[in-house]
Image (cartoon, rainbow, N blue to C red; front, side):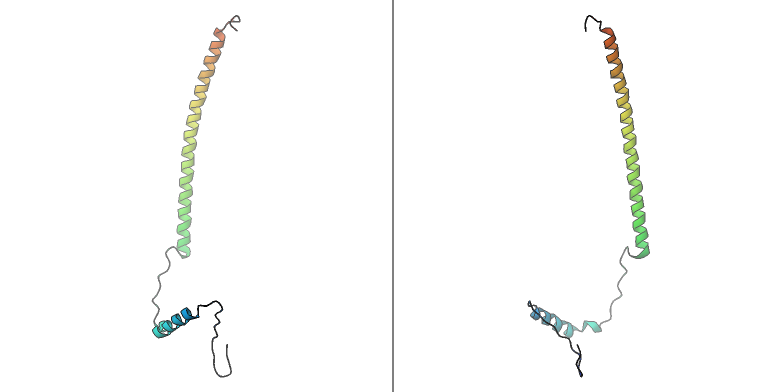
Length: 107
């Protein structure tokens, strides 16, 4: 807010906190942190275009790995299915042979 001669800020504390605020404000004014030179911050790792590209590459590699594992599982499943078909054909053949050995008198 401003008046004709001075600028000022007005704070209102409805649920307490004014003592802590005053303590922090006094501490900051005493330390004058706004006058200190800011140290250059490092760019966050993984930020920017390089970060996006890295994440896309990682996602692509994971997808490739998942697809490879799925095809390995599918190959194993097909091998088992082949075994099961061979086994069921053998059982079926034995059942037919046994039925041929049974005479009408035995049925």
